[in-house]
Image: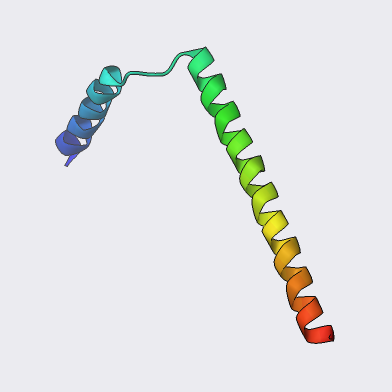
Length: 62
């Protein structure tokens, strides 16, 4: 059992050495892209919600 656990950690360590980690600038760029897309999607969905809310309110109140 302990051999299997040891082999797991040794294999995990070897695989982590093969990972191509992004540079600091790439990480910052990707993070800004995700934040920008999230804000853009939130604004888009908020606008749709506002439009549909107004349409439904006018439909039922008239």
